[in-house]
Image (cartoon, rainbow, N blue to C red):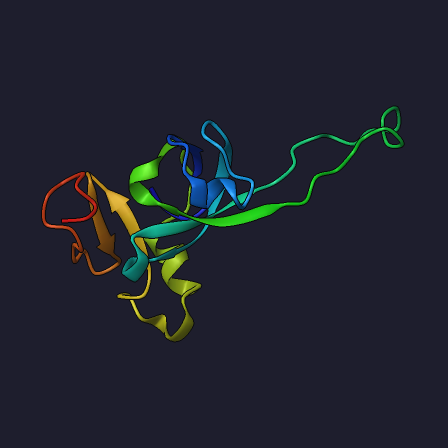
Length: 122
């Protein structure tokens, strides 16, 4: 799980719902912070606008919300490499960014935040 992966929300959570995010929604990871054990996920209105429907489409506001890693699953992986991610980091600090790999929350140095695989609170 990393930046630009498409993810599905697995749980109903009052904190998410107050932002308009519900179980089953699919969004895109747009930011990851190792300290928070969560990813910022964007939910964009996917309604295509065409000449035929442009006057009848009701666009919804985009939603951006922090989602805990344990509350989502990847449905489509992005093609972002660690090198691409590193080149986009402020101050090139490899500890700043995280991804989830084999059940571990890792920074780009490979250091793991959680001690037990798939237990994101450990």
